[in-house]
Amino acid sequence: MEKKITLACAQCGSRNYSTPSSKDQQAERLEVKKFCKSCNAHTVHRETK
Image (tube, rainbow, N blue to C red; front, side, top):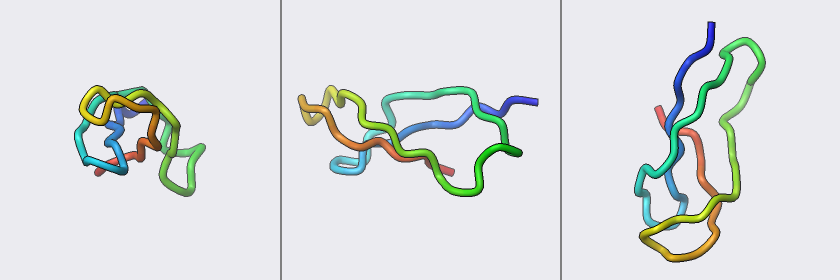
């Protein structure tokens, strides 16, 4: 079963993106470089709880 996770900007902390993820596949938190509207730049977004 897929779980919905939220991605937050590492710079400003705003939660901009959500994506489906399987719990079985990951041992660590997801990190993706995406565009942040608040920072107006491409920054690292990390999985939140």
